[in-house]
Image (cartoon, rainbow, N blue to C red; front, top):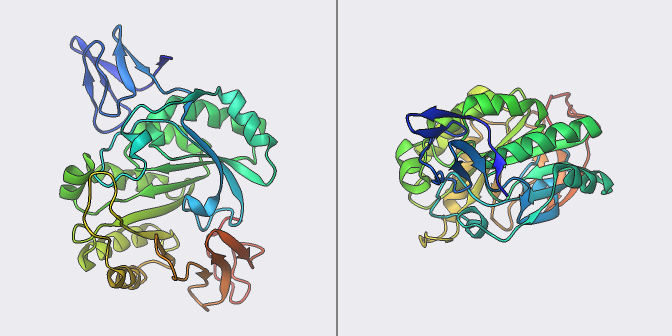
Length: 328
């Protein structure tokens, strides 16, 4: 079903999409790089409004969000399409292709969310949520009207223009943003995008909602000591308490390079901890993912997989009084 899209302008006899930094110029009947926004009769339409390909009740830790509502569940939904074309995409069946979907209106999704027990809200995830913009904006706004305490989470690549981001942020409680590399060449070759807009998204989001960052370290491509240090230095200058998740790469989709070396993952965590208070390793077994106070090293949140024991009553360390920034 076609739905009116936001953020576009006329461009000669075509239209230009202004939602993401690709700024696709579309002739009649043509779709953007995301594959879900199209020129229909000289106006921009979206084909994935309300179209849901995946829905599950997940622990928030699975997003991953370790410092936001630890131990709680969140209703997770996704659609299809993406404005990146990452060679290692783990959700390529819905990100790179038009998958089978079921329409669910904002009201219907909100009702599902509010009827669930021990559920903190809705997470837009699985595929890239920013290109699902109109549906997410309307649903998030109505959810807040129905229950101001219900939370909205985005798991995103951060590839969105500043204006639409700033209009959406008042309704967003938490974001996990992929910072795939700190090199423009990597973004261009591996992901089909640019670095700078993602850095701008991170800068705009931190301080306006809870933000955690994920970087997938791909063997011999973005796992050098120098690049990990650049990422951690950048984030540390914005917020030393911003959690960084360093995730281990495994072969997927078009990429068959061998998995990232375990010793590189462990060394990368040590490098990042010079600049950040909280660094976690993902896609690895037998590593400690619990949260400790960076000042006194008291165990604050114990994790075993997605099972969580939270020993905090507030964001303040009960031992030394350090402000962790954790949102309970």
